[in-house]
Amino acid sequence: MDEEELKTLYMFHIEIGITREEILQKMGNPTEGKKTGKTLVYQKKDYRITFRNIDRKTWNLILYKVPKE
Image 1: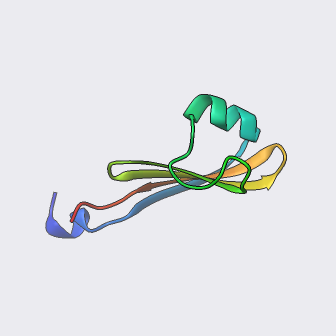
Image 2: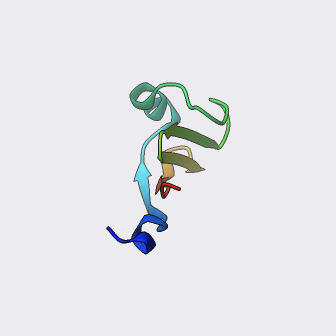
Image 3: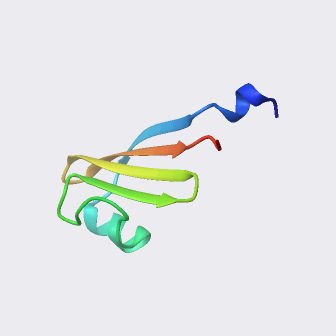
């Protein structure tokens, strides 16, 4: 890898059919956001997964891979 590649932020965004209860069952408690909120965030090292509520059964899933400094 070259130096420029190390500074790149990788982000994937998809829309999925899932309920809040299913997210919490599969992912556990979020590291940020409240269980009753419209955004649930899970952070682990340089990865961050964000679920944003669209409606009762649809969520945006955003996966970030944060570049190492």
